[in-house]
Amino acid sequence: METVKLNTGSDMPIVGLGTFKLRGQELVVQTVETALKLGYRSIDTAAVYRNEADIAIALKQFCPKYGIERNKLFITSKLAPKDQGYAEAKSAVLKSLEAFGLEYLDLYLVHWPGKQGMLREDERNRQYRKDTWRALEELHLEGQLRAIGVSNYTVRHMKELLEHCQVKPAVLQIEHHPELQQTELISLCREHGIHFQAYSSLGTGKLVSHSAVVETATKYNRTPGQILLRWAVQRGVGIIPKSTNPQHLKDNIHIFDFTLEEGDMGRLDSLDSGMHYCWDPEHVA
Image (cartoon, rainbow, N blue to C red; front, top):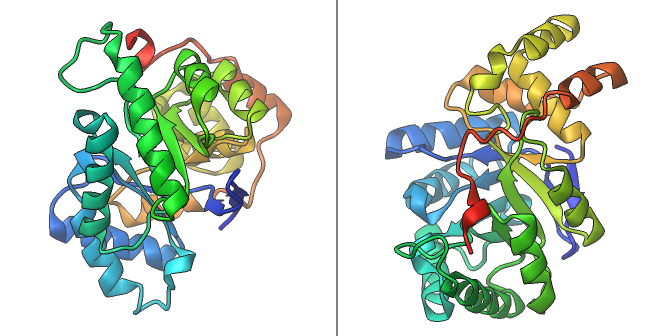
């Protein structure tokens, strides 16, 4: 598995297992086992996914079986929007650590730039973000969070964070695919040594039927999903595709044995339209 070196010095797998909407202990455990067997070592979850404890069961059961040491795993979780704030964030991290039965998480992200229950335009969101980040910085310095970062932050949110932070975010995770390329955000992240990681790389599944993607897949004898994932990693973007299908899990990780030609990259690049298939955080104050 190819990795990227974070600004903390840690190595993070470029491909991780996404677990959004992965619910039910049996399915979670089965999916995580399949992923581990296939070579996945990075698992992305969040408090709001409500599957941390089930993922922990799978790791406890199958890591010894497949000889996977803790230091070979990369576990990411995220702060629920309801837990924005200094004390709330600290408490939430401890709950996630307890759910996993771990002494540390490899990466912890602020899931959303706003506080749950507050209007998007409420200026108090700014202070909540600042207080939350201070809590995560302290937990990072104490060693309970090996790296900290953010999710769904816009250029404005990122610039605000960079003005006051003592510890730079290691990762920004946000929606990214050929129709939403986030060029300005990627440039900002590269300028500050922040790894850019995509979710919804397939446009919630809608882009796999796009003619440009299908035709490119035919040319390379690959699946449309593999083309979209390869396009992302070729741009230096990390990915966390989610699937419970064993064949799809295998396909999603086998994208490092071919390269898209410049013309094909350009064709996919030309699809950028600013289309959001998920949430748009632009209007969060």
